[in-house]
Length: 456
Ligand code: FAD
Image 1 (cartoon, protein in one colour):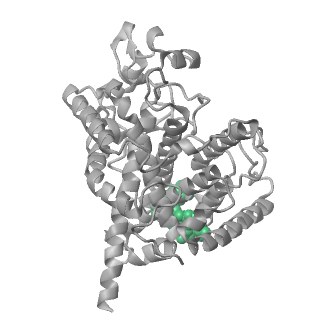
Image 2 (cartoon, rainbow, N blue to C red):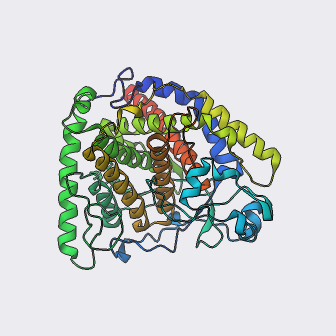
């Protein structure tokens, strides 16, 4: 097993582990504060309960533990007034309607500060849930007509839930399957999901075959991972696989590593009923797999680069919660965060990706985008509400980062500005918070391991 050297560069990124740790020391308090202590970034509206898994039917995979439950905001009074259904429906007057894609592009301005003449100034107008060509995710529709619930992310922390076994494995297998780029992209799947890459076997139709296929995918995956975990970073980078495909894998595996870190760090000891770090859980899932940890650092670099790129746009954003003092504070906080992230490609250089302008290169990008959209759809198959909530937030966060990095310019005059939905921006910041917090938890686990070695 290759050990991670703090001074080594994280493969496919531009910074070392030590650089990212020291940047995280500086930025972590800003990110935490923004994600947890502002109304704008701590409320998320999503369709958590009413979407069926589009790929298979697995009622046995549902989690009945209390820790899997999500507390939604049932009482409208708990939601900032500006986002209540009554207010949102007022915004759906003729001037504040969904502007249509052509108009959206022509305007080239963030929608967060949308004005509707007939209703006075309004700040929260979401697009409908139609996919924009440049989306890497299936959007969460925050409009009043959408079937959705408001959730306080701060009140539903990502932690151990007990969701495990076949159901959870099935979901991870389906996610890693999207990484098999060698399979052709099929525009229509056997389960009629538009944009689905290699069709997933419909579970109800041929369960045994599907289970076998999934197991094969995971066996192959485990073999590759074992080889990669023993390989030095420079060998990983020079593998005979294009950068874009590697990045896709790294994003997924890094997200999985972050989820594992959170559940091991905030673990329920079922004997004592106490919550706290579980060192054995960390050893089993992360310490033995440096490649997973490397992917987590990669994700940090990747997300930071995307948030840093918003530096040139946040001054135009209007963070409305109905409280002007808080709105200004929120804006100042995000400006400070984006401004503290190095502006050059010292952390991650997205400009080296998707450079091939031939038909092959263009279809690779489309393939990448479709596969990532499928990952976001797979989240509706997660059988634990809390895990589904954070799975959806994080796929949306990574999807938003991909959109910012690969679909918009560099802030030069005349270039297109990122049009982000409120849900995208909230997901991006909360995903950064999850990864940043996971890096801090890893530090604690390393200290616990060192203490254990000292004591032995
Ligand atoms: P799993 O984590 O299920 O992993 C399955 C297989 O994937 C492993 O055997 C290994 O081959 C491979 N693998 C594992 N980690 C990586 C990695 N980083 N990179 C590449 N390959 C890897 N549980 C909670 O307690 N709290 C949560 O909030 C939570 N959120 C979840 C969100 C989602 C979207 C999903 C699908 C599951 C979630 N779970 C959560 C369940 C959790 O992730 C595990 O599935 C569960 O704890 C069982 O773990 P396991 O040890 O069997 O391996």
